[in-house]
Amino acid sequence: MDWFYAKGILILSGINLMAVLGLSLLTGFTGLFSFGHAGFMAIGAYAAAFIGVNLGLPLIVSLLAGGLVAGIVSLFIGRFTLKLKGDYFCIATLGFGEAIRLVLDNVQVFGGARGWPGIPIRIDLWNVVLINLAGIVFMISLVNSRHGRNMIAIREEELAAKTIGIDTFRYKMISLFTSAVYAGIAGGLVGYYTGFLQPKMFGMTKSTELTIIVIFGGIGSVSGSVLGALLLTALPELLRAFALWRLVAYGVAVIFIMISRPEGLMGGKEITFRGILRAVGFGHKHSKAREV
Amino acid sequence: MLKVEDLHVYYGGIHALKGVNIAVDKGEIVTIIGANGAGKSTLLNAISGVVRSREGQIIFKDNPLPPLPHTIVREGICQVPEGRMVFANLTVKDNLVLGAYLRKDTGGIERDLENVYRLFPRLKEREKQMAGTLSGGEQQMLAIGRGLMSDPELMLLDEPSLGLAPILVETIYEVIEGIKSTGKTLLLVEQNAYKALSTADRAYVLEQGRIVKSGRARELLEDPTIQESYLGVRK
Image (cartoon, rainbow over all chains, first blue to last red; front, side, top):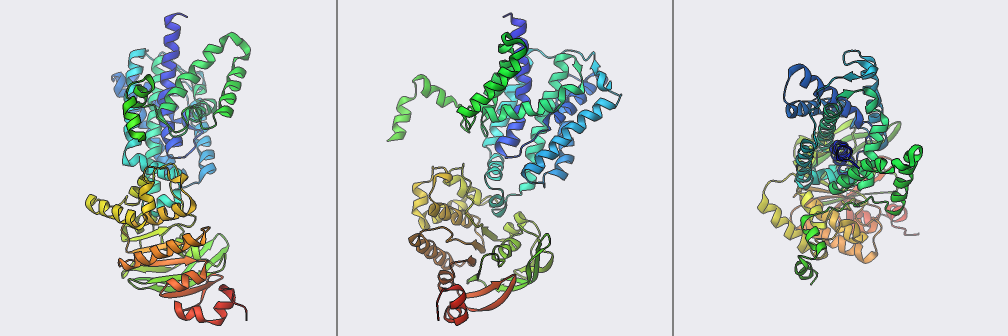
């Protein structure tokens, strides 16, 4: 396998990872399922490309701006849909995602369904890795903060969270906003990596793929999402030998893993630095002392 | 301290509370008894803001209550919801700390945590365990402890004896009396009418969304119609 090909897969994994991290906060830690996150990616992608190409701003600024635009849109959406319960919210996000795609298909400013070619390619492996590291660090600190704990409380028992004084609507809003910003940045990365944007790239298949990765990695685990994104993005490539049948093989693999590990790869647990040390044999004394 | 005036609650077309009036004074335990579907939980949920009332008002310490649950908790009212509803995948301690979510006084939170552990030594033993792994009785203790952590003036308890072994019901009711002795006010909803009436100071009887009887709990315990309908005494 030549390096250019491997690098491409890694970059695509990184892009998916960024979107999955955000969705992991919403689905894994707040308990809200979304089937429209590709819509936020699309908004971020077009906004970031527009800002970068027309205003000539540096990459990181246009990516953040793309994320911010997606975040602002999510505030409008959330205002109307976050009062809905479980499945109804899920359906509303599905409608939203499809609506965004159809609008971009039919509005000619960004090229409509033909797509938008000629976006300068500015993404390389190193900056994807840096952006993802920043994303992971921020997400871990958010999840472990008191805000993260409030979101988990909402996931566990929304009514009880209300009765102890958590403003559940506000925290769902924060969660949706943060996840939309991540999705928006991921969308921006798509545009600057492929140099071409088309609404078709952000359809329901993309949204579903993101949700599958979150569940596959394990609800409520950041490291699970990271593993899931890397594995499931690379998997279809590894299955190229199956040619026409590779997506079938992909589906079978996912089903197999979900049957054998329904809680997902990590099942709510995290890979920690101390855990790694223990696994390779250091820090044994530590764990024994604790058992006693 | 708490006054509910002419409260009407609807679930769609169903008229669940039809003009309920109750009053709770500082430092007492008031209980609401009634059959399934009488509207007991609805009344508590309306006070805590979890369901909206269509008519009537709720006055707490001479002011109308704000409309949303989290703003009501800030006023000093805390509900321990029916069916415990602990945060199953958080530790016992995290559950308790979350109860103090709106408070900023770290010293006071520490002190109340110690108080809860004194009240329920079992919770101290299981501090680091996930709440979902506790037994039903322990989860009820945790739910009450979590409610206490917000340092409420008025506590709303919804069916604290639900699904508990008789000996645990005793423990829970001892704790309820213990909470009263610290100067807190309690509004208690129960199906276990005997237990509730023997613990409370005053009681209301709710039937099909209306208060049909009220008075001192001791007297209601002696009341023949109450004995027949709620205490299972045959004549």
